Picture (cartoon, rainbow, N blue to C red):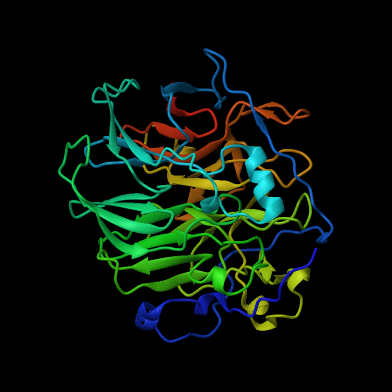
Length: 437
């Protein structure tokens, strides 16, 4: 496999707006308490493609939760429900969006020819649907298209009576009044974002700080390891920080190949994210991970992975960056496509879940045997991980040998009543998980 040389320091890729960023600081120290796991040797000859076949769920069939929990179908007949956001009045918003490839065959052909998603006919629903379950029984009484005519939306945020949407190519803002079931007012584009990306890296997520004075925007890479050169990766593989009006953009953290889910650990001011790592280094390389995000921190992409482990395909190009690469906090398995992240900030689940992180693993394609395709839970104590990931919602894989799956979990949200919602984009379903002692 041949790759173009990439002479780029990701933390330095920004627009003029980045002039507001602070002066460079010394290389950040290793994440407190983080220890790199024992990793297998990289295999640069690894070139496995094993796509799953979605067969859907039979009537009455659901994912499987631990004893004491109940899983029910909250909503169905959606079009790629990818992300979930809960408004203060408890209305639930679901972003329906997908890769613009019409099928796996289109995707394979595009990978072979080098086409991007924007060069294909659109297949994304490009809308946000609102659900209102006023009595909390798990059956919404209201279902309305909240916002349409978007361009691969994912991240959603309500801040100061303004509703923000992160399309793949830009951040938009709309006026909002509590209780609205549809937005018909003309929106305002605040910020251009680099569109599309490698193998579903089109997603852009949003998160505000507690004061509402900053918004964080996650932007994944345009490539696997920067093989297409410098220009394609500007402002990418980063978490960006902006003001609510879209101004004063700066890079908050870099070297994050595809950060999507973001959240604040309950009781802290610490930002966390889950990250999809690179392909074609082996069935068990490189682990996706959950990590706290250090301001100004560099997490390795594309030169190193999971700490200062140099990618042999870019050997010798940036030794200083390899050396300063931070070690993430929690490995989540190779090729699991860990995307969704929600901290459990309610009390309805047993105490072991309080303050912990639920992670939606969309599932592998670059692995001989499927990995991911489940929701895992990472326990936390005092704002820090206190144990390894454990399975929480399983049963998505129907037949491992035949690579058949019922669905693929992605976005996760915790409701005010303590229930957990899980978006299953492959089966066009949102699942509701409750605890029934």
